[in-house]
Image (cartoon, rainbow, N blue to C red; front, side, top):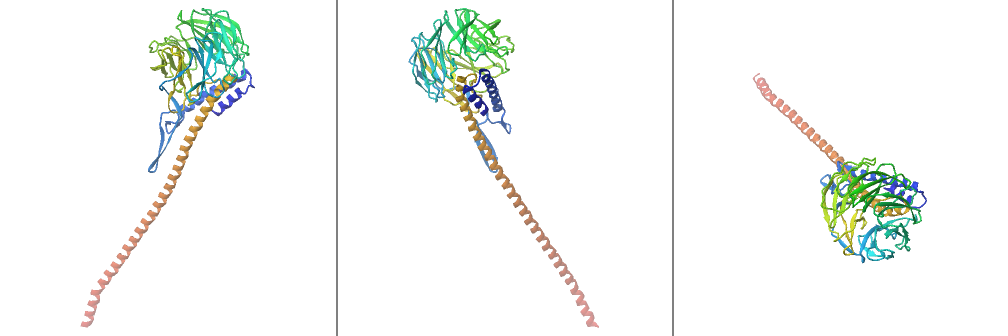
Length: 513
């Protein structure tokens, strides 16, 4: 854990190149998986110490027990009652990140009816306060946060009519005036990634009804249109990932009108190849069976990936008419879970083998937007949030926890801003580990003390036994000597008694003479 923190600090200092940060991130993600493996495999006398499967450790020491609570906060996959935050606007989309550099997650809201972007600043305890707003040139659309100019501060990108609007962040919760980049056609769904490997954030978006446009970032907050990809009409979902294992970023685009999913394989330079179209819509990439390959979860089922850009036959799962699904590890067990919107938030916990448990529904308003998942109260467990576009409110449900350490919350070290966002996550995880180390260390110390007491008792018992044995031997020896004396005395008495008649007879004989 300490090593991961060191890597985050190195990535955040701004002195490393893009390739070096990618290498740092690769090492950190590998260590994160090893962290979870250790958590899941650490045992004492056959009992898992850290995964929450036991409430306490107990040890019989002589006539008493010593015990110690184990584990830290781990999600159960359940969520508490909702608290409601009044946004004061009609939200069309929301995003989350630390925009003011205080280490707490903040909410950014795009106003559907007004020309503004507003903020709810996190207090780190699951509550929020209103921040300043930023004027926008268009009514609210999609919104996202990323470091677009490489200064380590989160910037805002939002869809604005026929293009994008960029607000560069100052790192203190304030933003500069917006700059609009017109693409000539309405921009719908969009996603951010580095498609050409230069370390700058690029954009892919639904564009003009039946195509995607890839815009490459310059690293200054501006973009240049680079490639256009043909898809079906009505793109309702974009998902990014490496589906064929070549290290380049690929694209999964879902068409709601045609109910087809389109796959584009990146070449690492901003260009893309095309894979066969798949049936389904609302697709998202994620490794649901923990085999190291990205799978596709759509609104109708699951296609397991083969790691080479191909996928297996779709397998359905119990469904109650849910909308577009999302994948998160909600309970920190290392398995991706499903969350989707359907009159609230519908959750299915993953089993880690491509199957999922029964659904649980949590109310999140009349018309909930896409869920915002993050650690709102700093306990190291993912919480659930969603804006209600009907009432202009934001629903927050804090995760229920139990003893046990889960997987590290998602983080990235590929940019300065990402590393800065990761450091509070890693700080809290390190604090939790330090606490658990102290708990287990205290228990170990108590075991050592108990061992010493038991050893002292053993020595005392051994000495007492020796003295008892010595006393027993002395008693037996004395009794033996007593018996010997009695026997000898009896023999002498008997001999004396035998001599008396002989003496009498001798006297009588002498008298006759």
